[in-house]
Amino acid sequence: MFTRTESFRDFVRYYPIVTLIISIHILLYLVTTIPFFPSRYLFELLSGVNLYIVNGDYWRLVTPIFMHSGFAHMLFNSFSLVLFAPALEQLLGRTKFILLYLATGIAANVATLTLEPLTYTHVGSSGAIFGLFGFYIAIIIFRKAMMSRENSQTIMTIAIIGIVMTFVQSNINITAHIFGLIAGFLIGTVIFKNA
Image (cartoon, rainbow, N blue to C red; front, side, top):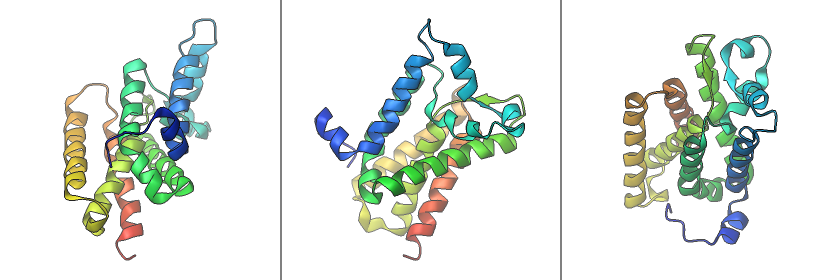
């Protein structure tokens, strides 16, 4: 489930939404680092800045989900998607998967807007990625038969490590991680608890 054995071509064919999200990550990283491009302006335009959001830049609740603060940040989040997102795209289908991803990412950014200072600035897809983990946890709790014991243990272990690292590492949007996780769990609960 979380082991990737597909060729690049097959991965793109089987998981077009995951591929699209990662492609956007890479493209935005490149255009915000190319020296002769108005890269600084674009980065500032698409980043989540609470002060600008409350003043009407509502797109900043969405665009930070696809922006990253550096190559390592972009690579780590994209790699996480390669490992953990394909199974959900296959399970939910393309439309429901992208709606889940965006809903949890936006929920994480709304929580950041609500709970962090107006001066707070943030980028990164980790709120949405934690949302996927929250959704998996809902599956484990309410639809245990949908995942093997080994895969359930993998998800729970990664989620716990992710939560611990959220509070240990510096420059982490703790609010986005926690509320992304909660949003994914709540969406999964609505889908699976009484289904």
